[in-house]
Image (tube, rainbow, N blue to C red; front, side, top):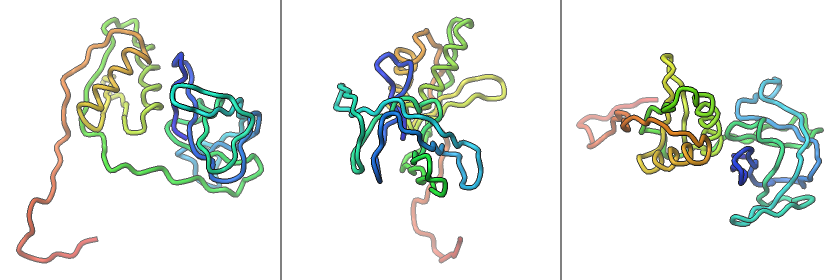
Length: 198
């Protein structure tokens, strides 16, 4: 269940597919975050689903329940999920979480961001957390020196993320450094010998 921002950008809809059973408004659910390991309590929550919604383009319709096979938006669980997670019924204590999706691209272009006005730093930090939650590919980190870094899959992806950060998630003026690409190596031709490796 990745997150989609609400119309006022204050909260997120958890958005995902129902693989089995039916999910209902008011239902108590076990929320297993991406860091949950079976048998441990870290990143595991039991909370109520406040509302179930169907998302149709820019329109949202509240429904009482959603059966398996459908895509659903959930209200009230966004603060327990960072990027992804698995929800089950409260009684399913032996359930295992679904494995996180692996993407064929990785964040390779980075920029440093800072608020033009130092008093807007808390808004920037909160905006970076919202950006990280809304996009599964973006990585937001803070260096030891306190510099805030945003990494994206390319310059266009990064440009869109920065626009969302500035316009939707913070509403403050930002200073943005020039994009820096990560150095990568690859194989360009076949070598003269055969090698075995693990």
